Length: 308
Length: 331
Image (cartoon, rainbow over all chains, first blue to last red; front, side, top):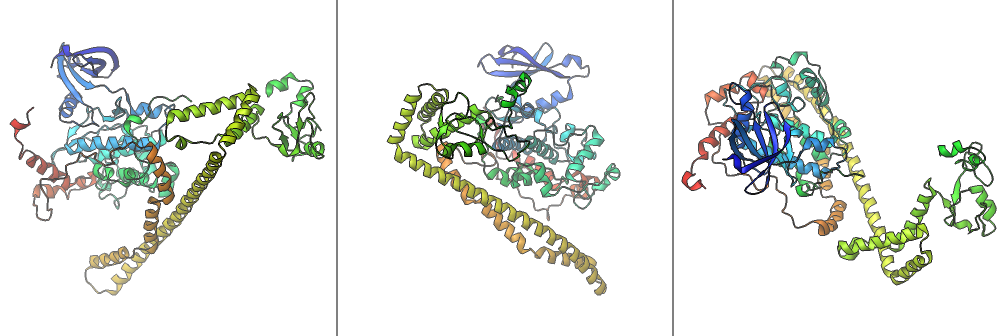
């Protein structure tokens, strides 16, 4: 718990409430990242997301969840020492020089689901899953990161805010403003990420909150009371345009390279009704992970640009 | 091309891609015009000219300044626009027909195999660029003499591989087609069943006097469910066959032996899953009015609220600490 044990060498990023430095753990020489929270700028004390991050990361220990190594105070600033993770999935998806195979996608999905499964079994909702928050370690492991919006599963009578998750990855119940949602919101996000990995462009890019509903339902069909009981009781439901759900063939045409079981997994992760949407256990046990090709060994996924 | 056209003059006609430089026939007037080349000099000559000049036996290339003697049976259609590429591809084809070992012939020794590939490249380069042509040709011939049996074997093996591949492709294609048909059939049957159920319910409700309407509806729905069609069964069977695709398996066995290091078999949770739940909820007996009341509220149902999640969390937290002694856990 001392600042002298860590060095800050290079500033790599700055957000609204924190600055991230690259550094070394002096005792071991390991590379680390230091997230310095700007306490001084907040008169009312620490920023909420910093508290959340510390609170939940301290609890979690899993190969596919980012590791919080230490916390220390220096010059009135709170510093989080995190493991060093050089890149993230968003960078990989966007860089057209990087080629990846269906087996690589399977490996990433597997690691993401294992990480989120661990978060869920500790009764924590992540609430901000997106490619940008799935970091990749030097060994190729996916690490679920950024617990700034995470929270413990509430008691049954507590209310939740529906204004969470980056828009493109927001589940339909959140778009409707649900107050009692479950782990299913995280599964939806992973489903959208899965689609994005296969297409290499964002799957449901809404321009604003209203447009997000439009885009989501046009792609996946407007839910009705039949497949999602009481969905019409949401305030915004009546104004919606009704789109039919896509048939298997339409999905096949959209996702040309996907196998049948990959589509099954995706369909069930992107199920409109949160009650029947698969949980992480069902996803991990799905046929997709058992069939060939086997997921690539993380260490062998080449995520560095391959110039032709 | 454009640079050549701009340079103009007479050359423009000679370089014209669509005109035979010997008889000046144009593709514009005879659209069937076909060009052939001879691997001796790669000069482009139209089919008619080849027939005319070489029918009576070997003759000199009609190009000015080219003194190669050509034979009619060696003429072939040019595949690549660029003659240099065409030539290299021909040479490669010839060399690879002789040097046709695969990595399996080196017992998986990558270094030896790479050296072998490097040797081949050397030969191709020499022949292509006219470096030590005679020596290289000699090398090629001696290798062919020495390894006749091996070369023949490899040709056989390649043939078999190609055959296997096309067979498996055909098999997969057929299966996919069958699957699509079955799925369509199922869809149609489903639609038919639904309509039938609707009519049946109306009929029964009309004929039955009084009674419980929901019972009737339930009864009809059950009969529909039992009508699991033969198409559906066939589809399941097909899926099973596809999964155990004999070609797919056969192709992969060989690969696995070479590539796969002995890895841990795949498990969904990487062994990190606690299957010994400390409790079992019997929802029919477990009485929690507080939660059960929520289960009926519209906003809860629509949000995807699930009582099993609530029970799981509350009970896990209640029992988690049992049997855990803090003084022992402390490191």
